[in-house]
Length: 189
Image (tube, rainbow, N blue to C red):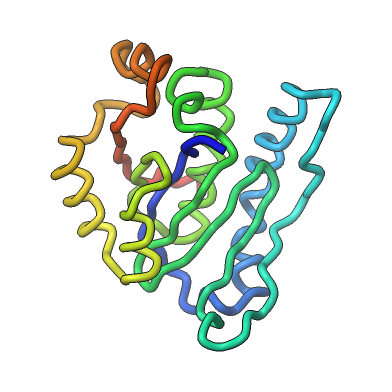
């Protein structure tokens, strides 16, 4: 599978279990997430796997798992909510997100639109397969808690998600770089 690109965002979703309300809230992200879907399908025209054009929610789970709902969107996006933080997982591998400019350029608007739709103030970009995701979504950590932990583990955030440092791109050629990025959510409205 590989380590995927993820974001953690604070959110203002009053009830993440209200599937119709969350899906409605995510509707403005469809143009950006469908662009990601189309990008991935263009890179493998012989096997266009993702054909989705809407957000869906996982079925109602039996107790005690009722408080966990996964939202699946076009482009391979998956959202999992915690009480204070939402985790958005992308189909892009972290190494590719860092080093392949077209992949990053198509994913950034989608991540930003999702963050904006959820009412986020900041976006932390990070690799998945990390306990921080569980701290945020299951243990209820705040985004500030997660940011502090990323700083302890990996040092300060990288300077810019727009212009990845050459040494990070070079490192991505051989391994999954333990770097992260932080930005305020740009407002499009």
